[in-house]
Image 1 (cartoon, rainbow, N blue to C red):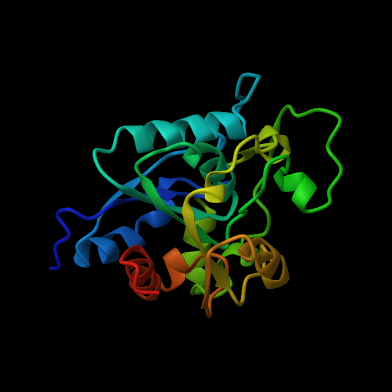
Image 2: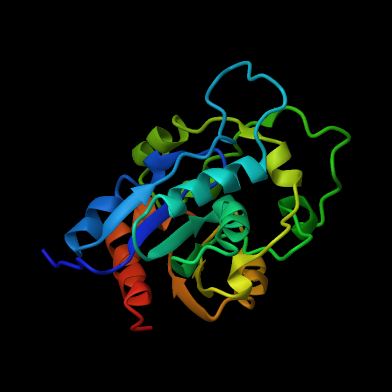
Length: 232
């Protein structure tokens, strides 16, 4: 196994409706390449049936991400998937040990933007409550049907507030960033990813649907390795 004793820790941040379990296939691949990884659990993925209001929002997620960053002794490369890009953008601002942010089919938003505003959706009358997971085909179109069903069964409601709250600081303004576009994505269309990726310092492509950490973890690990090593 390769060793990177002085290299950065890879901090993995999942997307909406998911949990740290989304990285279960990728982490062994990264470990085999010598990486140390950590995966956070965002509080806006609500596992309880009747959560108390106010339900956590994007800023609570950002605090969880920043706490994880601050607890790592040494450099950090953050890998954010989908919605996870929003709290990562917020949390990495001013973090001295973050050397790179990798946006995997993720929302690389700017100051003043929310997920809803980027998508041109009107804000709801209330930020309270949760929203159920969408059709899992949009997430797992390139997974075998049984694996897609198993992943979909683990999805939980997502805080509505998390989609409405705006970014107030953007780490990628001062931290190196790379964007990985998933060319067969049905959840975040590639043309939207193109718009977001224009904000990154480098852009890469995978021939996958929205969740390559589940469908092609080896290929994704190889690309993350090249990015984190500064080879692409």
